[in-house]
Image (tube, rainbow, N blue to C red; front, side):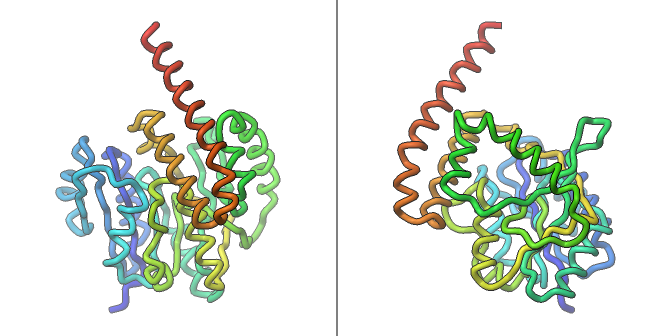
Length: 292
């Protein structure tokens, strides 16, 4: 029997969120031929034991240490068989309507290689917002806008973009879409061997969308359905500085592969300044914490 869907999830110290996410996946895909795989990145909160005990049908891999998102996902991808591969963050909760709608769109549109939908962050009562989770392919300028001190201006621009996106009524071709929840065609994804080597946590969706587009596929955003995301549950388990330095490595890896040597070299002194700013910021935070 052909497997329609391979679901891949990476967990790291998100035991409760992972359980809720797996419950939503199992319920939403119960009528499909599917395989569900989880890689636990050395969690210390009992996540792996919980998955083994409560979800015996889930294929579990256990890493001894945190290998981060992209390497852990690439490990699982090699053993998938699905026509489609669905990536789900461990703190994201899917529903049957969203999964079916996206797979139907992929079935009906052969040029579509990757699709996703709105990713809503909490309810309105919780101060949440609707996530129009797509953006343009990163440039040297857009990457720099996310670095200190330029990033302080970014959120204002993003909020204006989200307001404009609320007018979207039907499927929209986009350049990059978030891989917090993403459905890809399985065969080309496996042929590409997943995310590019060197990436760990950030710029993964930018990387894979660029590479799918180079193969002639399109990326689509479907606004009529949504999933819910409690974003940052895993990254909050790390120190600010450690997560930020992983981000530095990912920016350099992405830039070297996709922006070319000249722009990569131009980025190096900016990244050095950014690293110094990060270290100073972390030290100030630490001194304030100890001063309380």
